[in-house]
Length: 502
Ligand code: ADP
Ligand code: MG
Image (cartoon, rainbow, N blue to C red):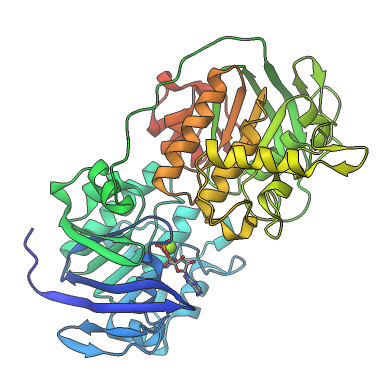
């Protein structure tokens, strides 16, 4: 598709936070009706750039050019008046209010009218964004909430729609619906700037892509000339090995069984676990898919022992009834955990790496003896992890807080795997981690399964679930589906279960 008429461009946009250049002379342009992808690893500066275009941040230097004129966007309100709309990664809807009330609250006065409900219905028909204006937001799925946000943008007739990672929370079915909407919008002349880390999406949806790396733009390319592999090379800056992981299947005696585990909701924000059953053997990886907030954290707490008062005989591990074992009692049996939150849960940010090693190893006689911490043992182990798991550190034994997210995660994974666990439970093991580090983390997880460990991965990333797992279950509203053999189930089926159909 030839798009000639440029709608918006950024010229030499630079944004500095402290002494860090989040955007370093970025050049970008989008044509009328074009769907343009903005790609880059975590921290590359994508959100910063779109926030500048939407008036949420002011650039330190450079120009934003809108319809051939240099403009200064004073804020989101100004951006919307110009014709720029944005759908955020995290929605900003009031749960207790209806769709209509939410939309009405957010619209500027000039877009308000008595027939708002009709206008919502017209837009929702025109673009296939099915929604009942009278339903309360708290009863809507994430995909439906996103529709509300899109309708809200469309009511203001945008000429440019910005979407920051809109698909990371959607099921595959919701993603294809969204793409149909975006294609329709683009045909009607609206330009779309689309941020994603799912590279296959880029190829099916967009005509051009701009790649950012460490705040700088690497290049702008026609997407049809590229593959997921070449995109990730441009993002990372060197060749990466994207070969499929080959996992050797072994059988051994390790066994985890969960039988009819239920747990009431602890408060209004927590999810009730309903009659959970699972069974995994050593050598197997069970992937638990699901959209966030469907009971993943509650299940994780039951697995780690952070939540006790479970009835007896619900969780059985290698002949032990561990239902009410505390985390350290579980660790002693050879169970390792990788929680979702890197800082605060998996590590203490103001502790150095050897102290963070000690945190999950102090039950071990070598780490401390009669209450005296064996510093050299912990130091040596932490250093070994740094070397073996390729953790990039600024200097020896740094504070956890001085590592980037991906490197800290490599340390945590290394710490838990180096203990040679018989059961490894990992929640979102590569969330927010760059492509290269994710590759290494996943290889380590496969290796420990090949050595006989039972592995359970809880992840919202369906690609990751399909890459790693032998068995796949879906958690939805506190229910865990049956376990599917990966070979016998497809993305579509799992996506439907994630959306609540059975
Ligand atoms: P991306 O969206 O590509 O993941 P961001 O644009 O969010 O990246 O962030 C780029 C870098 O700028 C990150 O290292 C981030 O920590 C930093 N950064 C973003 N916003 C701020 C801020 N308000 N203050 C300080 N640093 C920030
Ligand atoms: Mg971002």
